[in-house]
Image 1 (spheres, one colour):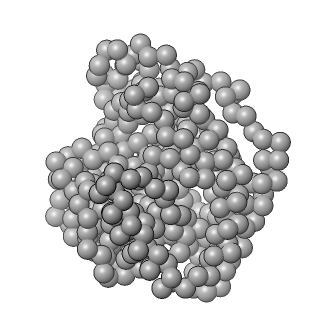
Image 2 (cartoon, one colour; image 1 turned 90 degrees about the vertical axis):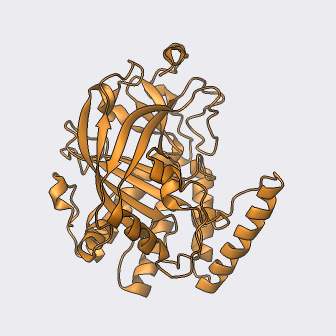
Image 3 (tube, helix red, strand yellow; image 1 turned 30 degrees about the horizontal axis):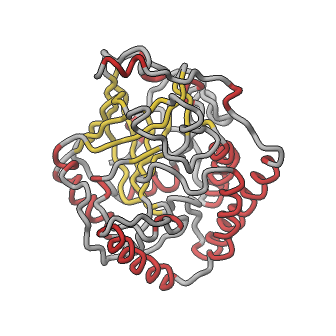
Amino acid sequence: MRADFASLPYVPFSPAIEQPQPNEQQLMEETVAAMRRMAQSQFDQHRHANRDAHAKSHAIVRGELHIPADLPPHLAQGLFALPGTYPVIIRLSTAAGQLLPDKVSGFRGFALKVLNVPGPKLGPEDLDALTQDWLLVNHPAIATGTVQQYHDAVLKAEKTAGLPEEVRTVASVVGQAVHKGLAAVGVQKDLLPLGLDQPQNHILGETFHSMGTFRYGDYLAKISVAPLSENVRALTGQVQSIEADSAWRDILGAFFREQGAEYELRAQLCTNLDTMPVEDGSVEWPAADSPFQPIGRLVITAQESYSPARRVFGDDVLSFSPFHCLPAHQPLGSINRVRRLAYPSSSRFRHEQNAQPRREPRDISELPD
């Protein structure tokens, strides 16, 4: 740990950091209503309720979070104030709210649920829960980083939700080719919705980001997970040939059946609200102003990552929400305020339609083998 990191001018947390917009409540309610209509449409089609984002899981694994004893004071905050080891559940997924063939590319998700975390939580339905969640995606910023942008994107998605699967597949394959060609000559381009143009990089080699801002005890931070062990670092940037509908399930299953993996959990603390805004999640915080610093290590052992019982538990029973959290890690900014309405609504609909209990696990033994 570089000593000069401790001397950076970290912005202190204050409730005044958040600046809701005058029409924000209406926009949020319209957004959640549109998401509910799309969820109902998907249920009517499949007679099964899936998540309205990250509907397709590829692996659900157990592991441990190791928090070291030598974190400096600016990092020893909230959950990380004391050293310890916590069991975790990790879900790897693709961002779309529909069950599309894996040939259709997309942003990948890394949902992290830390268990055995004492203390009251923010989620009104989970005050006595023993879990702390972070939902991460393999892109550092979200294109729809404000309530207005997210509202407009969801309403647009509702209009295009009925596009045939073949259209999405063609858009993804063409988008990947264009992305590769432009990247080869150093040209950047806007991302297609949900990352349809992204290369099919190996999921386990990706770096994942919270995109939105969170309270980090006395400070503000974005959270990230990066490959640490050599076997997953070697997979970074490795493009996979994806043909089968559930290719990622099979690739990850073959990996975890034979070996484990380690990842570094990191925090990037805010040093300047002008260049590192809280209210606009579309702005990538510059690492030159404040680097990501390690706060823990995730250790995953070899296991069966997608057994039938584990699939049902992960897809139908488990809920992940940024508001399954300690007050010291409160989600901040407009995109997170939308989530505070959207996630409980989505979870209730999914659990009610699938006749599954909605509960937060209190012990890692609840995750089936």
